Amino acid sequence: MKRLLILGAGTAGTMVANKLRPRLDERDWNITIVDQDETHYYQPGFLFLPFGGYSRADLEKPKRAFMPKGVNLIMGEIDLIEPEDNQVKLVDGTTLPYDYLVIATGTSPRPDETPGLDSDEWYKSVFDFYTIDGAEALAKKLETWEGGRLAINVIEMPIKCPVAPLEFIFLAEAYFAERGMSDQVELVYVTPLPGAFTKPVAARYLGEMLQERKIGLEADYMLEQVDTENSKLISYDEREVEYDLLVTIPVNMGADFVDRSGLGDELNHVPVDKHNFLSDAHDNIFAIGDAAALPTSKAGSVAHFAVDVFTENFLDYIEGLPMRGEFDGHANCFIESGRGKGMLIDFNYDTEPLPGKYPLPGVGPFSLLMETEANHWGKVMFKWMYWNILLPGRELPLPALMSMAGKIPEKVG
Amino acid sequence: MATATIAGADVTVDEEGFMTEFSEWSEDIGSALAGQIGIDLSDAHWKVLNFVREDFQAQGETPTLRRVSKVGGVPTKELFQLFPKKPAKKMSYIAGVPKPHGCV
Ligand SMILES: Cc1cc2nc3c(=O)[nH]c(=O)nc-3n(C[C@H](O)[C@H](O)[C@H](O)COP(=O)(O)OP(=O)(O)OC[C@H]3O[C@@H](n4cnc5c(N)ncnc54)[C@H](O)[C@@H]3O)c2cc1C
Image (tube, each protein chain N blue to C red):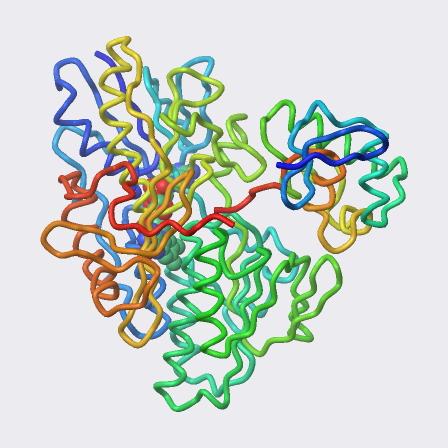
């Protein structure tokens, strides 16, 4: 009996289990998946929760509901991978041996990495929305907040869903406008990047959207600490930004056991081949989803495309054949921009997000880098697709690799 | 790509003036590049620059600030003192490696 062990039953791990179970004979292959949390959260929904868009119950489902028959789900906290012995230890002392290991334990916000965040003001004047608790606490705060200066701060890249902080600020602007509070609220976006976003063309479009909405931009800002007593951010080069309400995206890091097992980079993300997810260090270990150190966005859509490529490759790999599929870093993200509109960006390792049309049989085309109502509905629909198509590993009419169809490349120069 | 003459040597640079050929770099070129952006190199600078070059060679990419501080052992605060305002950019400029793409 061969053993495939998957660490993490989040977006990526669940998809891997669902894709591979029907393709690996149950008489020859045991598939086991481990997670420490019974609940699967729809993380993209955390963005809407602070503005009353969803409640907690809308965003939670039991992980077990997504596990196919024949997959052994173990609840427990992973403590250590012992690659030399091909086994994983759980905190409760269980040892799980494997022939092949897939690390899919994601990345998570770490407020304790930044002086000042781990203070009494946490969830009083300082919030995150990357966790369900943070998003819920912020929703309560916003209900009664009387206005002032709201700073949204990204501490360090990479973070998962790198567009989410911008979406948050667009939604906040629309939310306060709707409540007739625009005059009482000043919004400022504080980022370590040189502009609104990482990729130049999209950064320009998004930067213009900030300007139109009179949202301040504090760029190249490397936060050193938050002075919660005086309500201000202090950067390494001693620039101070005052706030009345701070919404921060804490440093995102992979699981600590990755570091303890000697498999992580300085943020506990696992270095892998960017085309096939095989660990640089061990030829029977893969890392997929947010857990992997890849030069593309950490997003559910990326995990989905990645799993498509991984599944076919894995079936060849276990037969001793070369892995033919080459992942290209394809990401496809809806960006909610407020007032019932949204944008869409589509890009990969080599091609930055471009304007144009994104063809999608049946429901598309969607407009790229342009605010439309259809894009907003695309984002709303994504929740249904996530639970009903993506996680169960059903086919979506989306090619895994990026296509140039419909895109308008910018003239160089 | 263009060619620039730095410290008497012809080197290949991109449109922002970053060197594109790892092997064309020398310590003299490093000092000259530092001079261009108003930095006088001390031992503390060299410790960082040597780490950046070694790490680039080993990893195939420019280390981020976090990596220089965690793996290279120089606290971020000190990096800001040595290479004021934009340490990530300045370090890589002087060390003759690409700007860290860091973020996607
Ligand atoms: C606010 C927000 C908005 C987002 N919006 C979008 C969007 O619009 N579109 C999009 O595509 N993506 C979006 N994302 C990103 C998306 O949710 C993630 O990229 C995706 O869930 C990554 O999947 P994953 O399987 O790699 O990690 P996860 O789904 O996070 O799963 C990791 C799993 O590992 C488990 N785990 C971790 N450590 C241990 C341990 N030590 N022991 C046991 N189990 C462990 C966790 O419990 C978890 O179940 C958003 C994320 C956030 C936070």
